[in-house]
Image (cartoon, rainbow, N blue to C red; front, top):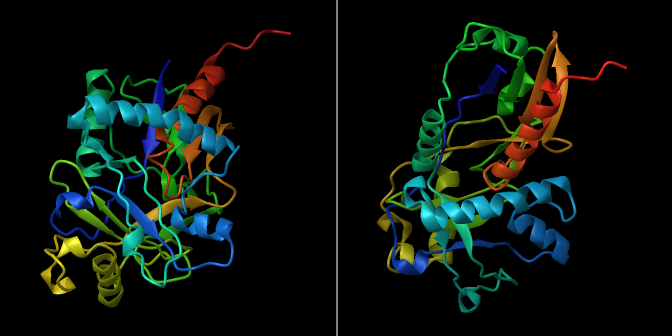
Length: 300
């Protein structure tokens, strides 16, 4: 079987001071007071999957894989974030806090590590500019036409010929708005401390506004004074500022099979801000769909 995977190139963006003290081994999100608990929970983790949904099942099947990497493969850049209680640190503008254990991914390490795992299994990487998704079938390294295309083009699925999914839109990751969230995450292997952030749908602006960055830093320092030893934001050691556009899709992630110009295409895009946490579950579903697409159909 010949298969081709299409992936849009993404650039990670972050606001990252140097690693802080050990009491920042955490992943914490705080929200201002809200009228209902459900709204509060949505704003704590905007990318959280609804209970009982297929997306939640993808998350559930991904966790054991990420847990295994954190426990047994530190070279992957995945590590645990320890439990941290901050009830006493909540100001009057907050009415709730959470302590939990999760994983944090240093993507600058993790993505090359994933690529190396693919290379070990004999996967061939090729780069090309495509105007139509069906063109992907023509670039298989064997020189033969691919039997299946796996479409993982993210935001590019909105403009890619043969797909042109108008339900795709960005969620801008460094802006001030109704969906604003404060978080502080320390990444593994010298990955710095990530400060954020927000969750603003439909904003394609990838340029940084310095005033927004200042507000993010001020909230982070108020939330976690250990970032600067109790001093102001001028004592943060900033590596860089950035803006990230999350590939959100109205109606949810698209994982389904479609025949385009005579070639089976398995779509896997539109994960928004929860692509990593659902990645292995989505991939397992894609493998299942690819198998069904290439399986010989009985003659009736």
